[in-house]
Length: 299
Image (cartoon, rainbow, N blue to C red):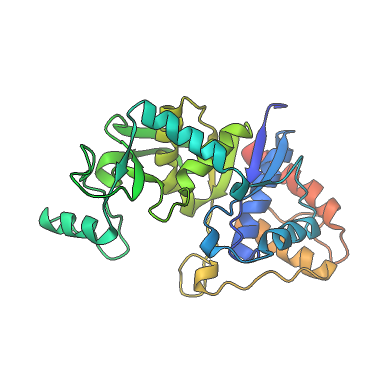
């Protein structure tokens, strides 16, 4: 598959930890197993949450593990014009509209409908501004979901998937009230611009897929294939993340690199590799990991 292009797109809110290395390794292995290219994109569009220097440090961590990107690294913070053009296209097609609702406004509207979400549940937007602002100032921009219907797609690991986008999410945000571009718009525009054919990422992002598929269709963009990898869990059973104290990977010594890669491979359910010895060079280990991944996911 010479036209295969995969990508790893970390947010620089901190360094890579054991969970994020799983996603990086899986996307790299899938690209190499298909004889394709592997891009790296730093998703620094949410600037208030980004840590200074974390993007460069992540690239150094990937290099230490032998995971080197093909071509230029993209930074979302430099892509504002492309996102603005996409939003304008949607507005011109009457697929996007301004919204004047605050979070409290949305909760109040849901409460009035008897539809308050459970704690940490999705706040399904009730469509308050879909037919006009009614005197409120515009805060954000949203994508209409009426035409989505029941969205179905196939995940290469999870199988057949479906979501009623309007019932479970509602019209979702493209540009935030603070003026920043929303993740959904940025990722769809950039995947298309980089000609990404396959998205390999953590299972926690699977719920984003129907929103992205709907947005791809609205913009007339191709839909990649998707594969969502198993999550790495913390001791309390929650997803391992920076928010719940995941520790940055220490990759100063070759032994640290081997241990980190082996742990990631275990999470991906790769078989024990012959090159798992204490003195194996990362390049030799990775070559055998590609063959093991190919047998499981790219027959």
